[in-house]
Length: 515
Image (cartoon, rainbow, N blue to C red; front, side, top):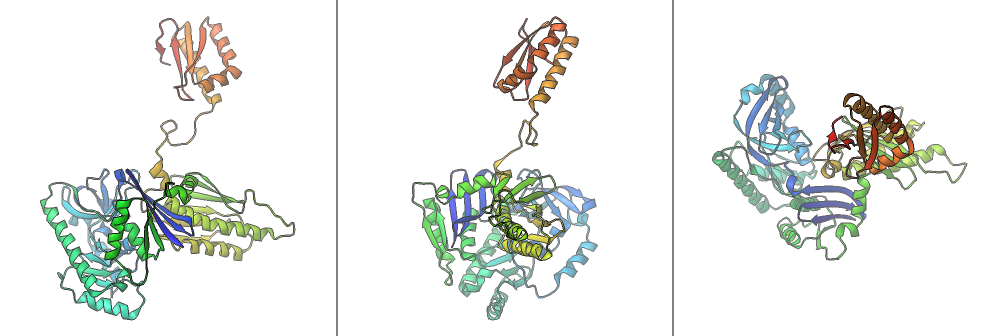
């Protein structure tokens, strides 16, 4: 059974995809940082980077957006990534695109302070701005309008020949400007001709409105916003044949019911229900516990093994360990036991990547297996588990050491980036100095204070935990250092201070002494 839970709150909307009542994927959208992918902007070129054939464009969304020459010239690959499909163009577009890139210089296409019409194809993440394209595409339920590309085609995911031919003839017959294109999406297979015609007119009206606003606007601004998480949830439920969409917000429930009537699919009946129980929906279905687990570095497996997630600047690493796994039968095959742990780990890794929304380079360190056949079994299980991932994934083979390299497309911020910020105490390192290190610093500061500042009565103020440590180890030593120079040293506790922080005050005038 496949379900989608839609939790709508004041500042946040959360979408949870469940398979057999177990969390399989999580999307969180906050009102202060709504998704930008698909939005169309009137932008202004701020800088041209000739060496990498790219430009920065101000779209009034914080960091400047980034556009490469390949995103200015016709680029079918971007369309394929955006809509998760393979288009049938009827000719080899790659050769034409390569010759275009060789002959064209970005300086001939863009100038500083030039006004441009661009669309976001990749979310801004951290300090990186959004990735932009000038190949605009306006998606609908059944069709995709390509305002500056004349191609008309049908998704290759529609395998029925009769349906493909019918759709090709239908969109060829549409009365549209010759410089505009249309793509039939997978869902168009079940749409009537009237539905396709109506949506084509709607998409044209949207485009005309974008052009009108572009000429009226005076600065960088958003001209068109892609559908929000609520509409995307309904479209996903319809396209992926989910059994139920459960919503805990009544106005959103009514809105989804109205949209469902418009996009009804005779081949599949989706149940849209309003959640009425007093217990919070995510708590009732165990989603909150799964989110808490996804925040942790360590994930236990039912076999007794565990996964350990670590993030570096360049990549994510996932370490698979046997943990508490034990052999109940002394004669059982140890190799097979390790294979079963790795197989379970492969499925959990795929699920955690979706829940945590980890993108970029990922290195999985599986438990060593001697047999190449067993290595292939684990690798096949990982690839199978990653098939349903909405993000593009590339998985390489397994090395002799049990390492698997893979990449996962970054579509938005990861779960940790959404929930956490850098620690102001440790500058994001996640550690603090131990008490012994701090005690050594105190000793150095005390000697400097006695010899350079010529103080004769001082008070050391520190956190209670640090003070307890000093009482057991170094207070007597500090008092001896002070006594040798005839300095009176007192100690005081202050729980407001950081664990690593300490201060010296003059007991004569009460002033803080800078050391």
